[in-house]
Amino acid sequence: MKVLVVGGGGREHALVWKLAQSPKVDKLYCAPGNAGTASLAENIPITADDVEKLLAFAVVNSIDLTVVGPEAPLMEGIADRFQAAGLKIFAPSKRAAAIEGSKALSKDLMAKYNIPTAKYGTFTNAEDAIACIKEWGAPIVVKADGLAAGKGVVVAFDEETAIQAVKDIMEDNIFGDAGSVVVIEEYLDGEEVSILAFTDGFTVVPMVSAQDHKRVFDGDDGPNTGGMGAYSPAPIYTEDLAEEVQRTILQPTIDALRAEGRLYQGVIYAGLMVTAEGPKVLEYNARFGDPETQPIMMRLETDLVDIIEAILDGKLQNIEIRWHEESAVCVVMVAGGYPGKYAKGEEILGLDGLDNETTTVFHAGTAEKNEKIVTAGGRVLGVTARAATIAEAIQSAYATVEKISFKDAFYRKDIGHRALNR
Ligand code: AMP
Ligand code: GLY
Image 1 (cartoon, helix red, strand yellow):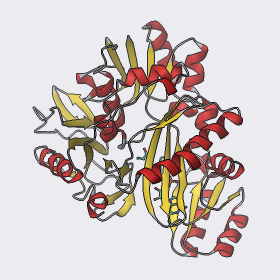
Image 2: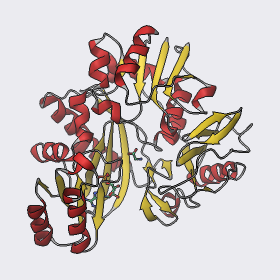
Image 3: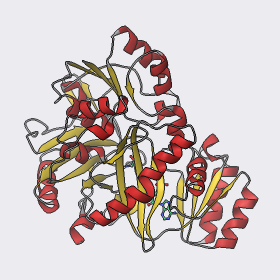
């Protein structure tokens, strides 16, 4: 079959890499892809949010299955458009994906169906939001309602910071329309873990656990980024906790969405805080996480096409999904200056011959230029290794990182430290 992967980051390279191993796949395309996907798929110069062009491409080229990476096309209704044209696509519908697109909607859904989450209020004017902050006191969390590229959340340890965040979001519109509604949330203390799950709208099958590192500097310091690395499994995620999350969060979420006329087929990502009172939802994403997907795909044994086909047939309960017992770690190499200003077009050296059975250098912001591979984004590479223990996987990933160089390359030296400390 012919498969199209939509997106061009590290997550999409990991998806292309896994799909390329399926005996069912004859031809892979990636739109727009990167220099890494180019070695396994044909890159197509269409951006991930250009749904109409993607649809036209899929029709003309008789694509049998489309797999969507990023959130933007989901919110544009890519699944609905492709399905209306009779094309198979692995992505939730626009109504289902709204669980990521609107924090207010996801909080209301959790409240209505008793899914554990932080206490919250939703506000359409700054004065009321500020009154809530004064009433609840710090620490407190301020969130822009809509999509803000992961930057729409301010965890404030004093009231002034929280009030300033409300003013920035609602009066200065720093996130545009995404900030016309603001959510104020109780601060949750605990350890974070990400659970991604496959679902056909009825059955929910969690993947192995993972945790990313959002801050740019060692020791979880500095500004938030798209993710500086990730590891799987997260040791905090014991069997008991997994059972509790399935029973109190994952299954109720999918059942609630279905009950609300938002049948959910695809990957659902629950960002959780494991608090003293148990796991609570921080956020949902309607897609694979980036960079969590890189270590998760390195641990997936089952053919991803088989899983996707089972989901699209509504028969997820019939398939057994197998995982490597080993751990996996992804260290992201970024362009110096990221998440602020950074250079592009720097030649990347040392990439040849690094990939093997247990190590893969997933590309993110890379491009080919004059037969050289150059940097083309903030997050450049996700060096991912699998090994018997987290400690060995960390060592192996860093050994590979040290063989790669480009001007002003930067990476965290402590990916996986929380897993090691446990
Ligand atoms: P979100 O995009 O909602 O996942 O928020 C981004 C990050 O902000 C999370 O990964 C947490 O580290 C932090 N965060 C979000 N909500 C809360 C909360 N209620 N309490 C504490 N930290 C939070
Ligand atoms: N790594 C977090 C995300 O994909 O949203």
